[in-house]
Length: 480
Image (tube, rainbow, N blue to C red; front, side, top):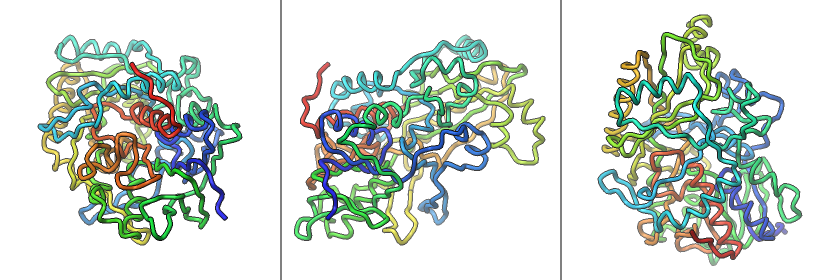
């Protein structure tokens, strides 16, 4: 007979680990299933060649793109999920980003900022959020940008980094897009799973890919456990999907298709409204060399582009630059350019369009991510405009620029494929994460976010997971 738990959680990223953390501390018997494995601690996750050039740690599963082509999403399957690799930017959504914005095709949350505010506080404490002063090189660039056009407003970027990272140049240069070995970067594994790792009521199993949901023949809407790709199964009173906005909806889609639950009001929306942000990497090359190390310490706002931000990127040098340029470019050229290059990340909130969706292949065919930014004309137009405007400011500051739109493969911020809401015909989960019309099934990851906002979603996903954990544990929600 399958072993039975209070709660089973599929996926150890931000939302899943936050939910686990709360439940284990509340005394619940919890099983966490992770598709991948633990990352090595031998320094390979800081190696540019292995991480970027070879893509050793990235997902290799091909997808269809909805237009007859194929691509590989930028996903990671390991304990801690993408939080091991993210750039540690941990920002709150603004108050207005919890309300609808019809002109920008943005949905509304079923509650306001005040519901997540106490959990933002908790997440920031658990993840040791800090703000660092700008180093001389990046400060000089920001000064030139602002002095030339005061509409650009820089602000300190809240980062999940320990101050000790400044004393370790290798880690400081390799936190954005790399997995920390020393533990200087906050992530779900170190900060949320680490403190409960030895708890007797917590079990973590790796290399366990959840592919199905258990239920009785007569009540397919009542979930009683999960089935893994290796044939093992586990039972629980409650199952939480936290495998990410590309995977969680496919698990539910397959369950709906196999059990005839297509009559559920929310069924057509499972996988719909996927958001990935409009993201462009912008490189600025100056006539002088830069000696900064951390670099990713500031974010810029401009009221002319209310749905967009520009973040500084982390360390850039010839070795990293070489992974993005043609192999025929000599390394001495890469080194010369890299020493003078500062990176920026231009992000624009994309709205919701039902045609932008994740479609399961049913295990027999490749899954599909049918996403086209042109279906979101306001976001498309603003993103082009903000990227051009910031590039012009850098030109005026004496820097040459080059940019690259990340496109459909840039799924680091994949969100919204099972949005939360009050109306089952317009949303997939209720305000506490339970799938409408189903019993015992919840969602903890970025799938639930109705809006992507103009900033990185990680802190909001952590906060949603902490709130869900309290709810499942029967704990009262804190107030402001």
